[in-house]
Length: 611
Ligand code: F6R
Image (cartoon, rainbow, N blue to C red; front, side, top):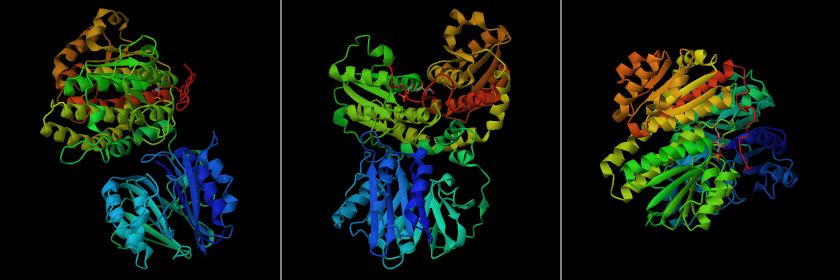
């Protein structure tokens, strides 16, 4: 989730590239860089942020060091995944000769074996990134034709990418390709072309856009553009006229970042899983098994949505790894004098990695000698720097205050961690792990299926938008998801929503249920299905209005409910990752209908750095 912009034309490239990057800063901002093609070769400036000054601002101060006459180049603004946010890890990356430059979005899954092979062949790597392999590979495949060299790279790399490359030997030429990462070409005036990851980067210059599809390549040079597939077969493409204004374009045409981020979940899940789960059923967390040796207890800590992810983590860990675990709200954990020692693993979950209470809990755990693992979305965040080890969610920047894709990717990490420890402890047979990993690979498609049925969810949100209170109920993992569903509804719709363990409702809160009260029931846990069904009957007996989110085989519950939304078939333990999606959309449509400020709800901030 970074921003890419390229330019080939007749005007000075540096200011155009810089202006494009400014428009993409929302996609990633921990480092930035520009490489220009000049008659004497490639010129490069790139950096991370410095002393509180944003990376792009630092780059802006160095723009005049670049050759003003250069009329082609590439730029990048980075959201770190592989490698910390440093000057060296910033893009563009050059090959060793300095004759080839690349910018890359996405994740090259097989970069480790490729890097080893290239190193053995004498290529010297400078950065910690996966992207740098593309620069060396490009040089290794080059024999006079840049597009052919790029095709050689594409034949070797696995994973997701939007790649733009250039070479000092081909002035004015840019070649680019995409797979599972967006890429567009903007056709400017008089034969100039822009290549970018997102439309906002080029909107000031042109509204004539070619949208690349997965598996397509483009070459621009000397006022011409040509499209092919990865094998070099020509592709005919037509121009789309973009009518969005600049603000809508930042959201890729979406009305709100929240909906965009909900829709990004399939890709975020693919990226977060990438490189971590091998076909053979092995899990590579990038953390040595010795880090976990001797752990006898695990405590998940976090706030809000991150705390809810920890609740799922606890349940999976106990169920699969048979390891005692608890989940605590960070602001409570830090003050309750928790019992911690070197056999305790504290997992600090935080999208931003900067939440004050979570950091305080992390520090308390370290002080008491516990091992600390951070699960965060931000490379270089305080949590990542202070924890002993870190597992990153690769969800990309999350801008809407209400967390969506960070949560589902946190759940994915929870499942991987629990499976990994279960395997290490001999608690889960290899075949079961392999089957679960296989199922995890199918999750993005299952979520796409839910997203495709959003109109139904918009209808279901209609009665909710007129209510003052709502309940979310479920058992086991469904209860954890119910808590997150209720939080989504309250924070953006301002409707009072409460999540209850379904069996607990009759111990008090049932008194509040009338025909006016929507009760959203989650029933994905097969072992608890009959019990949840009884709880639905209890609500129906009080005339409560039940919306059931169920699996296709839960026919009785669907029949008992007033409304139903069917989830795809999915195993109990992985169900939370899909079950939250309809609840996110219901909350979203309810808030929209109530006319609320969806992305910036009242009284809330994206990163809470106060205690
Ligand atoms: C809810 C939400 C908050 C955050 C919480 C922790 O949608 O976004 O509840 O989850 O403030 O933030 P992080 O994960 O950044 O520590």
